[in-house]
Length: 228
Image 1 (cartoon, rainbow, N blue to C red):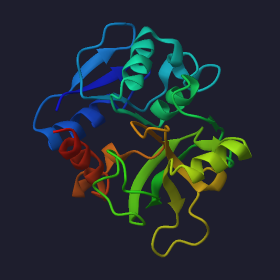
Image 2: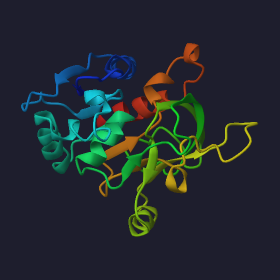
Image 3: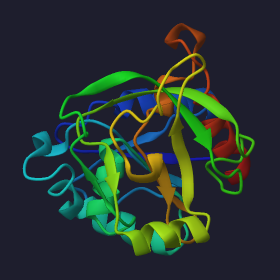
């Protein structure tokens, strides 16, 4: 399986994703510059985390108009899987590949810690390595991760099984476990055909016991198996 990772000015998790994919594929993912309209052939495209263009204006708003994103939209329309993590999720919403928007955290502060997640469905390329209802511990690191959409859109996401992950408390944690105020505790969503996933948590930072959790590894392993 060949993966391509889109790099923007201000990306800072491209190497983390590269390492996670290399651990699962045994191969070397490609790094593609955002300014290149021609992307290499790839079975998977990843838009990584960071602060593209310094999060100027709205997070991901400028990056969504990069030449590479036009090609990403075209590839996604043809069924190529696209994964957007954190800032990548923001870029995918700004590019129209996913509905809704990512707003300021309800606390108005940057949040960086492990959070609890519940897998809402295992019926996708991205979540095939998990069981529906499985609880995970994966880190977040964002200031604008508060997912918002109008009620009609939220209901449609629910009805069509497009909610991939929700926040939930970690074992022994009080409260809702929602770190940013996301509507309906949404942490990640699919597009209608489920070949595009955007999520705020960082599974690439939960693949090794030294990171405190390996709960992100099944996402990458499952992708590799599904696309082999």
